[in-house]
Image: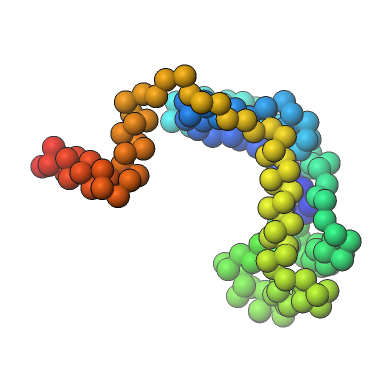
Length: 178
């Protein structure tokens, strides 16, 4: 969505330690190549990658050359937003950001649903197209392997998500705290 609106950006992939512990692997170089913008792995709690983000933000940023694979009528409708709105505002309209709706009404700018309906397109179709594009990228850069060993913390995490064992863990934690 940011690349469509011509907004420069970087990608910071947070919780890379959690991803690795569950067997998730992201091909960072391939993702960077697909999007055409810097991709920085981070672990925010340990402040890893923060200096890379700051260094990247201190350099001039570029827009992504990535192009969405979308039907022509949808492309035409979406580009109509960016013709009369600033890119960030257009993005907010396209994703139906509720915080901007009152501003649009004051400026007498139609809501995204109204603009799309003139082209015979629904918001669901727009969101489906974005999702399909995201899934296509994901299928190229994401792999998941079985973790070599499941830690006690991972087991507790899994058990806490189940209704029966989750309540037992909750009561145990509350009991230990008080």
